[in-house]
Image 1 (cartoon, rainbow, N blue to C red):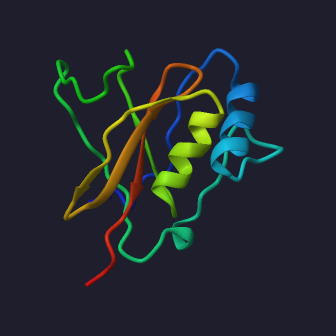
Image 2 (cartoon, helix red, strand yellow):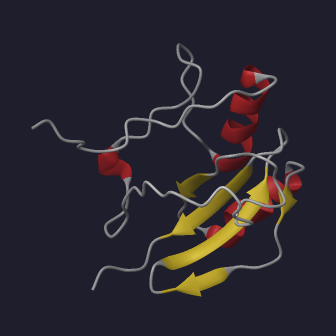
Length: 126
């Protein structure tokens, strides 16, 4: 039987794709592509201990608030506080809390199009 091997991408609609692409490049150093509407992030660039999650949430979850979207993107970052400071400078609404758990450190912001984004620093491998 055929099986899933990984997440091949995250795709969503936005009002101004070019402006949002440039915003993410400027404030989070997302390696955007000139010949594609987004970026290509290769699995070998993920730090040791990092991974991709496919997560399903109940329709009435409040986890994506304050955004009013049916999805949320999670980016692995190398410096959580630095990344949050960058997007704040870029005009994003940054959530006050930073969460630390056995899964790593997490912070959140809402981008200029109203999408809630989770930033993640994976834990050091054992």
